Amino acid sequence: MLAHDQITKVLPGSLRHLTEQKTSQKFTKDVQASAGACRRSIIFVLLLVTELTCQSALQVRADEDQNGPALKVMTQNVDAGTDFGYLAGASTTPAFLQGVIFTYEEINASNFVPRAAQLAREIALNRPALVELQEVALWRTGPLSLPPGSPPSATVTLYDQLKLLLGDLGNEYVLVAVQTLMDVEAPVLLGAGFDLRYTDQNAVLVRADLMRQLALSNIRQHLFKDQSIFRTAAGNFPILRGWISVDAHIQGNLLRFVTTHLETDADPVTQLKQANELVQALNSQDNPPVVLCGDFNADADTPNPTIAAILKGGFTDAWPTLHPLDPGFTIPLYIEDLPSPPPYTAVSTPSHRIDLVFARDLHVTQINLVGNQKTPPWPSDHAGVVASVPTDQ
Image (cartoon, rainbow, N blue to C red):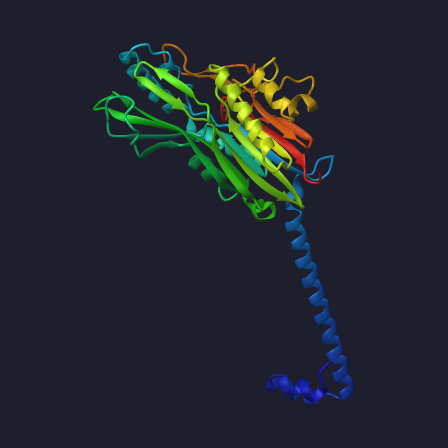
């Protein structure tokens, strides 16, 4: 503690004048009272800082369930607005060109804006730490370029599903990775004509308030070696498929989160090859616990070689483990590419479970479907899946 004369030297002039009139005893009491108040203020500040620090450290624990601290992950096929049936079914070039017109009209009727808003509401309601997205479409237009199959060149955005979703989420989520897959363009012979370009994407989002705590790292993107071919009367187009992985560091534990979109069951041979390649890649790395989510295009409730290959690779299908009596169907909430349009879509009852969550070397404690309400608008023709994994395994 400073001596009396030292204190008066550092006090402002007016206060020094008052201080000099105090008795030594009164001054000592005043200094002691002031010091006590100061100590109380310091203690209050320290407690406040400690509370804020603890709140920050416990953000990752906000998704507690009955089994303890957990982290939520959500997988969602966003739906490009078409299944390209009008193109796949075209046996002649004129039929293909008509199919492009139908596809253009179909995506314009797909309600991308309200669907993105509905998906954002589902995400905000469930607050997953990570959101893993498949079939995130970027539709663009540009000057007419013939013949069909010319290199993609359209640049004017028509619909950007990722941008729409991030806009609706505000600052709540941040883009971690986006993977560009199939990128094709075809002429739309309406009016003077123009080109329509489709770019398929996978993406991963992280909750903004958890970004620092999760310390995401080792973000990887891979295209599968085996790809299917989309064969049309106007030419053949490679269907690029791939996967994204990201590592999260949670309370000293390393977890790997992976999202993928496998080939459809129209080409089961390629689908199985992609599944085997993915399992082999994940098992040949440094082997932390893995949560594997996505649209596997393989019905998990029927005997299926693709699902069998993933299970054989050491993964567990989370849904039947936690909901053995519920089929958990995720698709289709509506059917696209109706014949003789319009209309282009029709309400449907889900009958397949292809949007899945697998885990290896850890167990999922909760899993449920979202966005599968009985009435529209639906975020997608796929239900989303939200799963919780403990952070202290």
